[in-house]
Image (tube, rainbow, N blue to C red; front, side):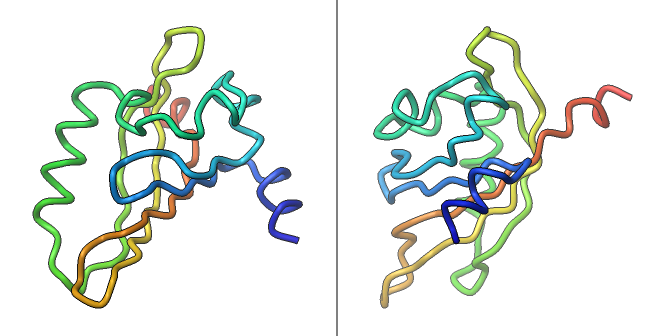
Length: 117
């Protein structure tokens, strides 16, 4: 059921490891950003972001409180054709018993048209 949902969703669903590598991305990344899942999985998430987005994301992540496990974040992602698209992503942080983030689950929606309007 999860596979069906992630394949049919208009959102990109992803999982990122503690060291910032994609461990999963929904197959619809091909239709939305031009990449196959194989081109994304195992790569650093930061390599698909605009540099300003990476900076903003790191500042935000470093300011999180230990009990803050969910955020909404807006930034630009690079399409395979080189253009940047605006995405609003809700991230859920998975923590170990000591409170360290060990995984991030993200659901991102393309908001480029809304942002440009």
